[in-house]
Length: 410
Image (tube, rainbow, N blue to C red; front, top):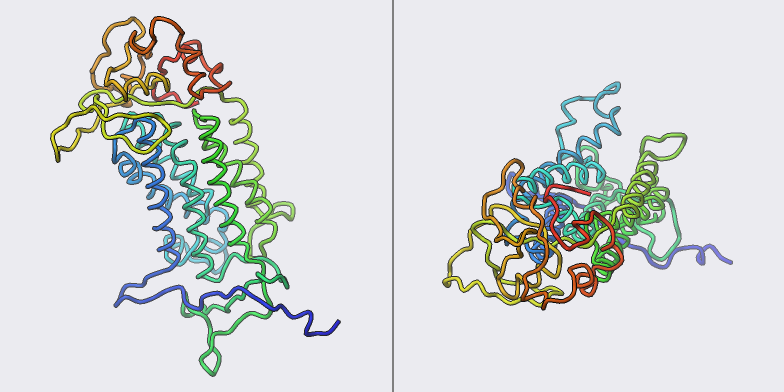
C-alpha cells in the first residue's frame, strides 16, 4: 500500500464566499436559503390547509406571526445555550441582538414558530392541530433548504474522513465575515484534509422525513397533531446521530453535546404524544361569509366547485370554522349543503366569540339525509373513507363523526 493509495480521489468543494454586496446591502447566502425554505414550507402548508377546508391565503396570515416568532425563538435558544459569547468574560451583551452575524437554534425556531402559529390560528378560528399537521411535511423541506446555508458558511461539518464525499473546508476570515482567508497568491486557504459534511447528512435526512410524513399521512390519514409528532420523531432521530458526528464547539452535559440531549428528550415527548393521541383527521367547514365551497385544489378528495361566484370576485374570509368528519366534508364539497347540527336544526351562522371558534363548539352531528341514504351511521362511513382504527379514539361525540370545539388541541 502506497501513500498515494491513501489519498482521496474525490472531494466535495465548498464556496469561498457566502456574502455578496449589492451596493451597500450585503446579500447573505444563509439568509437566502432560509427565505427560500420559508416560501416552500408556506406553499406546502397552504395546499394542505386548503385540502382540509381552510380558505385560500390563510397561510400568509399564519406566517406573519409564525416567521418572526420563529426567528426570535431561534435566537433566544442560541443565546441561552451559548451565554458565554455574550455574557461571559469578554462577551458583549449587545451582540445577542446581532442576528446577522449568525447563531440560530432550530429548537427555538420550532418552539417560537409554534407559539406564533398558535396565536394566528386562534384569531382565524382554525384548530392548532390542523395547522400543525398541514405544516408537518413542509417544515423538514424548509430545514433541508436552510442547511445549504451552512455549506456556504463552511460550518457544521464533522470529523476528518477519506470518503469520496469528504468535504473541503475553507478557513474563513474573522475580520471579513462570509469570505475565506487568502494566501499571498490570492487563493482561498483550505483546512488540511477532508471532513464529514454533516450538514448534508441532515439535509438528506430531512428530505427523507418529509417523504415519510407525506406517505404515512396519506395512508393513515393522521389527525390531531399526529402528523406533526411524526415529523418531530423523524427529525430528532436523525439529529441525534448527526449531532454526535459534529466537531464544532458546543456546550455539553456529562460530556455529551447539549443538542444530543435535546434531541433525545424531544423524541420521547413526540413518541408519547403519537402513541397516546387518537382520532381521525379533522376537516373544516367555514362559518359566516365564506360558508359556500370555494375553488378546489388537488387532493385525495373528490371535489366539485358549486360556488357560482362572479368572475374575478374574491371570496370573503370566513368568520370561523366548524370541525367535521371527512364524510361530512366530502358531502359539503360535492353539494354545498352545510352539515346539520346535532339536534337536526340548521347550523347557526353566528360569528365566533372568545378565541374565534364558538361555531366549532357545536357538534356536527350526523350527515344530511341525502348523504346517509337512511342507512349506515357516521362511524362506519368514516372508517370506509380512511379514518382507520384511530377513529375509535376520542370522545363519543368524536366517534359519532361530529365536531369538537375548534380550540381543543389534543
